[in-house]
Length: 330
Picture 1 (spheres, rainbow, N blue to C red):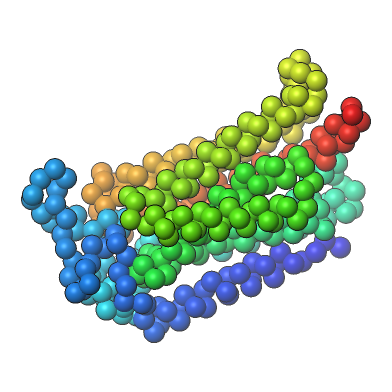
Picture 2 (picture 1 turned 120 degrees about the vertical axis):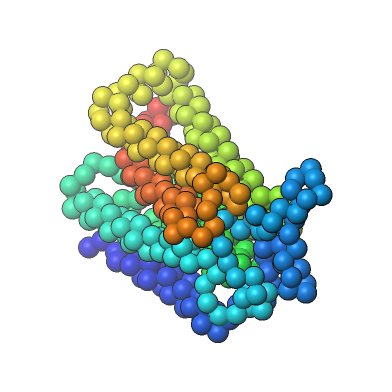
């Protein structure tokens, strides 16, 4: 029988993140305004100047992703939710991560019953790697809630950490696909998350540091995917043999499906990033009092869709067959 531990990871992870979140929302947040609020130590919002001038930018007194909030509540750590739309949109993660649990269990059952010839880590009942991805997808949304609900620097770093937990998985699983590296997977993953979280805290004053660090991790992921293709080409004996294998995999259908999932996922992330940029405070898609907040409703949810599509990309891979092919040619 396929293990049910994914449900415990999902439920336990949700409780671990949401119980203290609800307690803070009920009892009050730390009165330590995030730098994006422009609230000083006296609890007063210092309106910045329009760039290149000495004119106060009264239309954009903060840079907290557009949605309006109560300055006094943030300054005094009052109970409640500062940005309800950007906060509540993150509940999508409960559903995307739970969907992954069902898909992973379904794939494992097929593998155990001999109903599929696909063999990779996401079909393995022994590996915890799929559960790690479930938690990363869950935390990606629920971690973001801490920032938008509190706008408190004391806890808002959870938002950045959730993105590093998610993005650090990408290059490490890419290496894991070709090499059965066991415990090294978890060690390398933990190191990346810790290093990038610490860098985010150390460089907190650098403009948009979280987005720059995420971009670095995404860049590392692309380079790792490229390196994996070069590695395959070398192990297969050169460009000609590699290209023959690419065509054979494409004709089999699985490579075509995997490629479609990857590119649709990349497109989701690209569109999500566009909305994230254009809906910044003062951006063309920003309306602080509107019920339609693109940052939460599009950046958050499209990033969640990308996470599911990446799983569908990975689940198509014939990683164990590729390793066996290399072993036979050695």
